[in-house]
Image 1 (spheres, protein in one colour):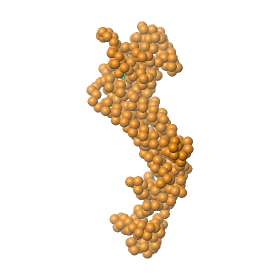
Image 2 (cartoon, rainbow, N blue to C red; image 1 turned 180 degrees about the vertical axis):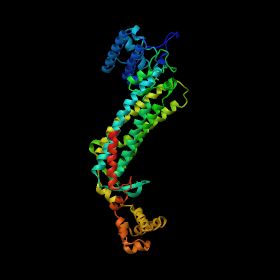
Image 3 (cartoon, rainbow, N blue to C red; image 1 turned 90 degrees about the vertical axis):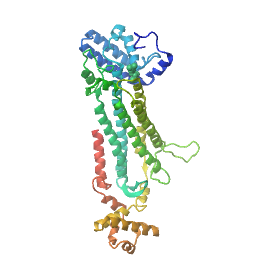
Image 4 (cartoon, rainbow, N blue to C red; image 1 turned 60 degrees about the vertical axis):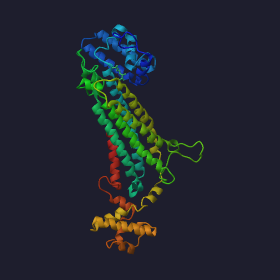
Length: 459
Ligand code: ARG
C-alpha cells in the first residue's frame, strides 16, 4: 500500500517497486514498529489528538496486529514497500481507515526506522554479548583446568619465552571481554530515541518525545531532529564492534587450527566440533575455527560496506540509508551461529600438556632468563644480552639445551656465569619469576582468572 498519492498521477513503475522493497529483510523490525506505534498512540492521546476511546481501540488493534505478526497470520503483501507501510495497512485493516489513519500524524518513517533499528540492535547486541561471554567462560575454564601447564610463548610465531597455557588462553579472554565492554559502552550512547524527529524537522503537534523514549526503553530522546533521522554512526559503531569480535575469534581460531596440526600437536579437537573428509578417512578438520576465520572477513566487509554507504550522504534522511540494515542483520546472524560453536570447540579441546611442556624450553626460550640473571649479578643488560647469546651459540654448536652447558662452558662465555645460573634454567623457574602484575607467574594467572570471572559477571 503506497503511503502517498495526493500529488501523483500514476503509481510506481514495477522496476521501482521491486528496487524499493525492503520487507524481505526489514520485517525483523515489525515487533519494534508496533511497540513504537503504541507509544506514539499514547502521546497522541496525551496531546488531545486521540480520545480515550480511540486510544483504547487503537491499542487493542495494535495488540491484535502484534499477535497476528507473531503467529504469522499477518505478513508483508507483495505491494507493501517496507515493514512500516505494511503494518500501517495491517492497522487500518483492524482499526478501520478513520482511526487507523490517525496514527501517522506527527511521525515519519524516517524517525520510525531510525528508532526501531536502534531498538533491534540494542537487543541483538545483548544476545551477542552473552554469546561472547560464553566463549570467555570456556577459555577461563580451560585455563583453570590446566593450572601448571607451560607452553612456548611466541613472537613472530617463533619460540620466545615460556608462558603458562592459562596465561595465553586468558589473553584471548581479555580481548573478548573488552569487546563486550565496547558493546555496553556503545549501548549507553545508543540509548537515545529519534522518535519525534519526524521527517527531519521535529513535530508541530505537541507530542512528547521523552515519553516515547522512556516507554521504548531509551534513556532520552534526540537533541536534534536532523541528527536523529540522518545519523547512522550507531550502526557503524556496532558493525565495528561485531567485526572486532569476529577478528578476535579469528585470531583464536587461527591458533586452534595450527595447534591441531601434527607438527604442533598441542590439541585434539573433540569429534563433536570437528569434521571429516569425504575422501580421506584419516582426516579430522577444524571447520569451526576455519568458519570463524572466514566469517570474520565477512563481518569486516559489512562494516566497510556501511561506512562507504554513509560517507557521501548529505543531511538529513536519504534513501541510501535503507542499506544500513542488512549488513548489521548479517553480522548479528553470523555471530549468533558462530559464538556457540566456538564456545563448544574451546570447551571441548583436549590439550596435550606433555607436548606443550616438552616444547616450552625448546628454541632456547630461557635465554632471556640467563640475561636477566646476569643483570641481577650487576652485569649491564647490553653485556648480559651478548653473554646469553653466547650461551645459545655454545649450546647450539653442541646440539644441546642451555641447561646442558658445563660449568666451564658457562664461565668461558662470561666470568659472572657461575653454576647458580642453573636456578633460572628451568621453565618453572622462569615462569614463576615473572610475577609482577600482568606476568605469567602462576599466582598472577590465578588472580587474573578471578578478575576475568568477576568482570564477566559484572557485565
Ligand atoms: N524503508 C526505509 C528505510 O529503511 C524507510 C522509509 C523512508 N522512506 C522515505 N521515502 N522517506 O530507511
